[in-house]
Image (cartoon, rainbow, N blue to C red; front, top):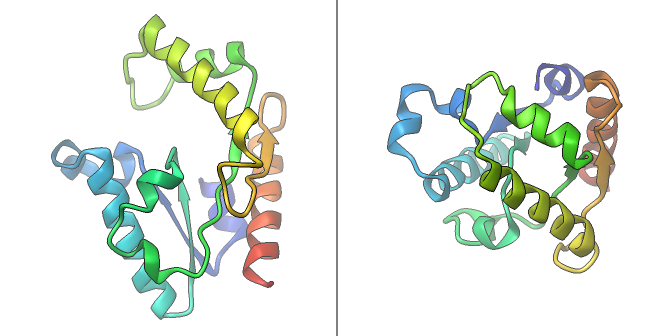
Length: 153
């Protein structure tokens, strides 16, 4: 996320992961995390700033957030990689989360669903960025290009 913050200095870059919430993360399930993040984004917007939320947030989960209807548009980006790369990354996360084979299988199915539904389940349609071999700086560049294009429309 550091690369993204450098490329988008006028935006607030947040995360759904534990690192965003510190010790409070144990007290917040993901729906409540999303609700807090959308509230933050709403208040940032009142100050003229855009927000990028990194992590897995589905449209139907976002729509349940108190502040969701206060936004004209909420856009999503799919950061995708092949199954082997994803499984390796998840098993070696810095947060030391334990990823069982069953959890990895569910993520493989979820990744396929995202690819199959990016055009129809998201408004506007969700772009996909392949992160399998691209270095973080290149991925951050692609994300920031999309964010700035949408922001400046």
